[in-house]
Length: 459
Figure 1 (spheres, rainbow, N blue to C red):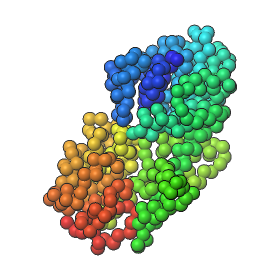
Figure 2 (figure 1 turned 90 degrees about the horizontal axis):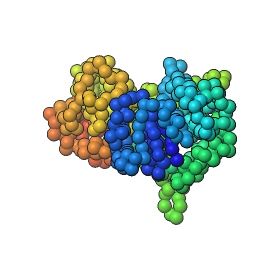
Figure 3 (figure 1 turned 60 degrees about the horizontal axis):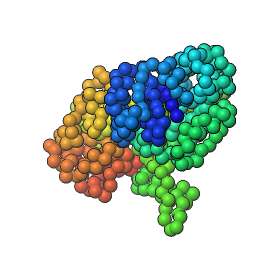
Figure 4 (figure 1 turned 30 degrees about the vertical axis):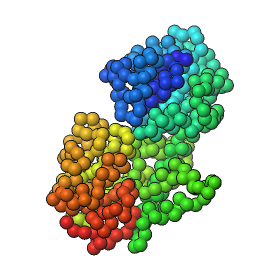
């Protein structure tokens, strides 16, 4: 089947490469000519595990190409996926300007097409968007009535850092359909994917995406609130507490005398907050949507409030144990919001770095992927340095604050910390290290644990 995908960002490009990998002919559309050029050269413009490899393979088979000509892509395809951004507005609601613009352009293209065409909204949009905005705009500019063209809403459930795997091995496919004909055509696209397919209404499909992300974000903020309480309570360790919760058979069933250990338990775990392009934006958007429906979303508001403050727990712990942050040399380990991606959007590291600088600390940052050449975050103009290596980041520092669970950081040992001119305080913001390897050997402080300052070694 011939498929056009409008918007070659994380979702669009992964979707395009994934569909090309199962034999569809895909046209990726983007206004960024440099991105178009890279895709046509078989080079991924974004960092995502295995994406380069699959893109090159699909490209060599001529199953994927890129263009900035939206009209041509629509006219030469059977199905068009909309995967443009839906950023946050100042009030937390989503900015639908890209959705509106693309719907307008698709409508103009369809004006010249007599053949049935399916439009699939894959961008994350609040309920009623497809029905009340996308369809009327396409009808207006195509001069066709809905039914002459099909419409579906098909939310994505891709984890950055594991997006390619998630697309090729989906746990579910949700098809929000205007009518049976639309749903049948989209189901045909996914016929080679073996998983549960839920066919439902447009509004339900839109709400499923938000509910899914809001629930996972709630688990994270709940875990962090428990960690913050434990931090103030002698003799408690949030990681041990939540390990005990994980053993509840309602969360972690025992089958054939073995624990299932479902992946969702990784969200019921303390850290320094969630970030990225989805969770913060989607929880804000759902909260704003609820308010427009005259409902005050107390839980969603609390989730956001806890998350906003959580990265500052690391700077607070550092200040409490160092006495002051002024002129202290602090290393922030990790800038991407999670490992295996170069995405720094809403990363906890950003607010942490800003807080450290406001306290007049001397900040250096190290991330295995993100550096001064490819950083895409609101940190320009701030006074901090990028370290060239992990050793460089640690050496001579008063404190090292781990934000991102990159596998490379497993190379940090008590011996490595002591090789520098100082024995820095290591604050573990993710429960990443085996505390038995550090406690009593070096200045190790995990979040969510009450440790008296007198128990922290001095340099």
